[in-house]
Length: 609
Image (cartoon, rainbow, N blue to C red; front, side, top):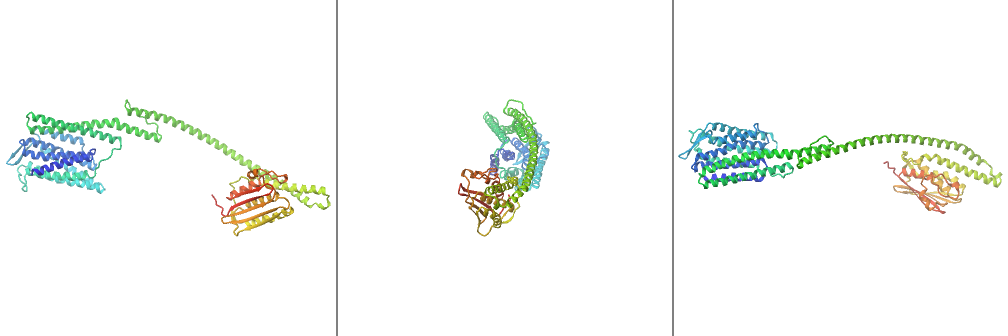
């Protein structure tokens, strides 16, 4: 029998120590550990009531442990399920303290007798009240556990609550039954088991089963958590301080016990009184220190830091009206005032920035309006310029056409050689003026990159055949050989026919103009898979090396011996503009005095970006 008692005693002590070791910061684990220690005390004192010579003394100590069991169990059930109980925990603790103090008097228990191995207990008037409180706490705890089981959907949580529920039922039934046996003294034996065997054998076993199931509910699912926040670290420090104080109190109690026993005081009374005083002292000291230290940490450290954190968060959102300014000379108070100063500076900076942004916005709006006005004026000016140039070109065409026609009708055979030369000079200058008028008409087309192209499928071979045929008359007059050669089969591409016609007219006309009489111009058309290449080669006067890079600039005119061959510098820029809009390239190779070759590469497919 004694072996069972000592095994269950050490089992409960081990469970309590392991609960603290696994997570000493968890309130559930701490209450579980205290419960385990109290159950261990109940088990051992049940034996001492019989074995020691002061049964009443040890019975009162036994009841002292029993008094705290329902209170701690109810608090533990609430913490496990995270459900609030309808009575404050402080009141529960005061109730247990009240019943504990009543043990000094005869209000709870008057006497205890051992007659022929039978336990006789004479109860006081408060025993019935305590027994009722005992039953209410355990039933309420069961209700909390079953409510947590029903309201939680997690399988793991349900399992925790179920373990705790079953663990509670096991000792409640036996405990109530055994206390009923004591209460109704006439019931000496029930099913062959008296109250002595129940207290010393059955109760240790059932309570150990209960604590084992409680341990499964707590220790398997409440692991040690790493401190992350300052609040958690301060809580860890507070708990460590409480543990150190408790160890000191227990150590002092042990030393005092040894001293009193060594001076001849009764062993039993010294041990019981020391245990009671030590427990009461631990409860009161822990409560006072925990309350005061917890409030101090919360008020002086955690709460100010949280307020500073919220202030920083609001400042980050742009709210600069929150001010803290804690009084004092500690680091947190200084930090709060520095935060206020920073917030005020940020507020001023934000105000300056807002005013600057408003001024900048107004300035940008004014500048935009002026730019829009300037753009409208520029468009109107460009339109007026274009209309003016078109009008001049139109007016020049009519008299030039008449003069040109009249000069061609002059019979040169009836005129002497001197007048014939003069008339030829007039005709050349007329052609020169006609070319200039054409360039003036095309002036407005230069640089209009955003003008939409009229894309269609073009046969470049047919286009060049028509253009070269038109220039054969002009070339034949100067005995210039103009030829067209095609290499390949597919000469279709996507492009603007009118614009590309203008490009090849400009290039072939330039080749004729800058060729000597009796010269040679070769136009080569070649199919190169995804593109078409057109080369216009002449053996004319060529271009100087330092001028090749400039010929595509607007209004640039290459140096030539015959001034009548110079244009106004728009033909090549216009051609480059058109080819570029077709995603093509114009290259030129020339040697001064030996001729030039202009190469145009055009993609067959036009890609719109």
